Length: 435
Image 1 (tube, rainbow, N blue to C red):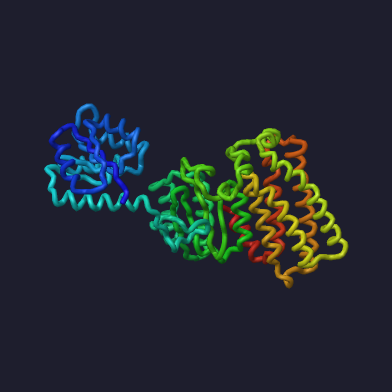
Image 2 (image 1 turned 120 degrees about the vertical axis):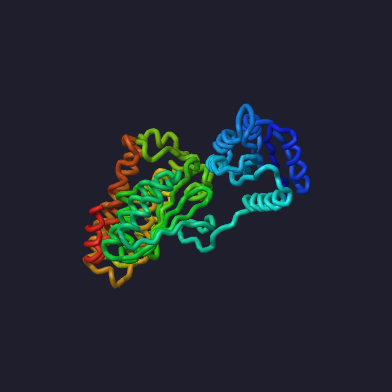
């Protein structure tokens, strides 16, 4: 059983002694004391205490102010207010500033023992991870057991989704408003078309996840197109009628989170530029800060471009089938491995990766002569853009912003998939673009 550090904060020595005597009945406790709130804050800055009994009325600094200050840097300690003032105002203020419970003096030993048993059990399980095996988001099943479900069937219930995440219960997450806005837009389209669906909010130590269900009536390529166009910085996954977005909690950067893109990279790759995507990054600066091993891989891309170009040229002359397109997809996958190694281009890598998967899963029956011809033309144009991207950023290093060609490349990937969309889906796309 783990040892718990306990801090008793009270200016009255008799009160401190009473609490310490009662706590002696529990094993594996290390007990320390502070004479006032200011001393308690200073001690908590130097050491983490699992359980803090905080008196309210003290000289120098009272318990309410001390609790507020401790909560600014320590969210894990359990703070229990101890007060002789059995009034609602004092209790509410302590809970507001971060206390989790309160005990009223004079202390009833039986009640105290039962409560402390509960406190210690809660604290023990705070250090053990319990995950929701039925998590719905597409990113990670290791989320907290709690979740928020908002059922939407009309405009009023849809507005409740917006209110919860952006007004009443705003979460400290990067990109929250952008993510909620795009999910709201998709939800508004569903409401207008008489569809019922749900939003599910889930959470882990590092991320918030919001998943929208019931999107099976809109093609995945259209959803992806809208997201890459209107939510380019977002992390999202689509599948089986679900759309999940992932929002990093404030203070949990990519390198701190331990999951996602950084978790799968070797040490050299992790040294690649980690600057915010919202800032313009000159090509010369990006190349200067990139790992040497990566630059060797960039130089090898030219030969892959030549191979793909030769294959596409032959397909244009002699016609193309599933086998030839899969050959192109295999070469693009090699190309994309290098792009995936660069954190700054993870959205581009995702788009190309989705295109590769799409090509590999093509139905022979759907691959008509007309569609094959269009695909060859669009793939050739995309290859030209990729070659320009490689030369301008990594060879000539002339681009003022390494993302200057992102939108064109993303659009090229999506346009190829849109060849296979039915007219009704295209109409749906136009409707959704109104948001």
